[in-house]
Length: 103
Image (cartoon, rainbow, N blue to C red; front, side):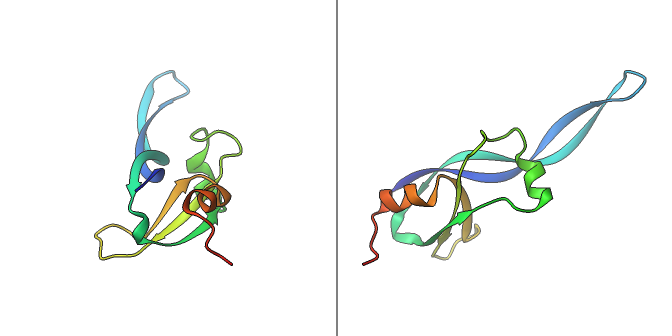
């Protein structure tokens, strides 16, 4: 088993102040993390990942330290969850952890 931090999307409450000083509550989608255990037998592929669209970048603002590296895990199996997940960690780190099998 491999313990990782999965990046997922959630709704966050945001209090916004009007010009008259009153506040109103708005909801926006942001990225957050949760701990996850992956069975290494179901990992099919790992790819480096970078948030590229302006919408994705806005969701990450203030959520992760500057320079945080991300990877995408492609998982095999019949699951009700998605087969690709984004995790915190560089591709190089996971190559070392899982062992470099390329000859």
